[in-house]
Length: 559
Image (cartoon, rainbow, N blue to C red):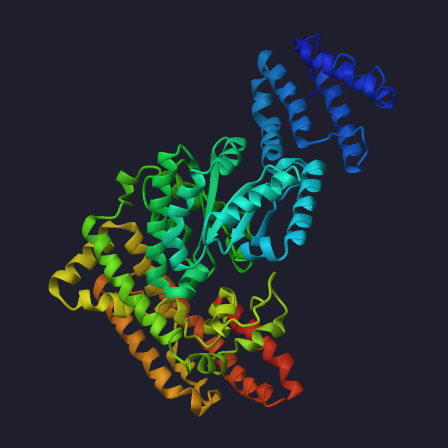
């Protein structure tokens, strides 16, 4: 920006800013000297550079916040545009301003997550956490951390308590209730309705220009009632939340807590976004990306561009629900309600209401051995003295364990039982095929089922049966798994009208067939090493850990 005042004029505001900076930083003014007096843009940038150096050194004369730096950039931008410098302003200067707007001085924004029970049981620790957030905001500006996620939200009271605690330490936060179980998702609308009607929460909304985030959990809901019931509960919860937001003039953003695998809400991002109910779109999207997916979705510039492009295009398309057909057809709503109810009953009957299931699960999968990996930001099980094993087990190891033995059970079990009664009649099958063609939500479910069923290998899973003690009924449990897998596969094939899974996606089909011969031997080694490890052989531990990592890498999936 070596533009001379002898050629073009400059805004008086920019000249005044340069004079103010030189009074504030006389040593820098001396360093620059008079050589660039007639090049105000160069002189201003030099002063900004030195001020950034002081910001990095935590000097009091540095920029207090990124907003101050952006204000200086805006001065340059306005002066350039006012004096024939649009091309310069639209180039690298615009790119820099965009980076500052997105990343500030903190680069990565952090969300804080607290379980609702800790608000009462560990209140001093929660207050201490909020004080740390307040310190961060003072150092780096409010954008560095402005979201408090409340997991385990079952009512409005914890949200109001969190708002009170934040106010006590001087924080203006987005308080985000997270609805995780199917029951909680079904209550999400009434809970947010109660919050929106509360005078205490009204101050939170007004402080954030009536913007509110609500997070829906895909992982725990699927672990609670199975994949089909969870997907339908999340869909209905979003509809209810959008209705409450419209009536109370709330600018709502749904935060999707999706995992990397289909059993935790994963799947192609473009299809998943278009599968959301209509009426929510304001061109915004917030979702979680699991660490395991980062490298193969964003590890190369071309991949990152393609994945971001897919997310952006789907987000924009979803603002026009009539075009993409995201609204549920009347018969589709009834169909999903009935199918979801049967699927949930089947899943819960096998998993939650089966006295021998936990013993079968812990021996049939390496779930207890996953802790040997020492990975993850949270422990595999929530601390709970009296809770049942499954209730305290987190969703990630739940899915991870079933991925290791190649069952992938959380992603499909119960779906066949829910959909088969309809597929067994001519009218019902016609209705399912119509939904698959016309309703993105249902098409996304069916295609995720097709993918996970194709990745499932019950032949490999069967080799884990010798690890299960007789009192856990290994063959009885596995017979139920085989029966439900066959039922679900049959329904999917009839809906999509193909002979073999993934016939319409030959590249993916071929990829799975090519990959499996390399992963299968690792499973064989894992079975042998699990037997030795459980017998107390210390030498088996390290190679066992490597088989867990190897299978995860081979399948490109953990939990």
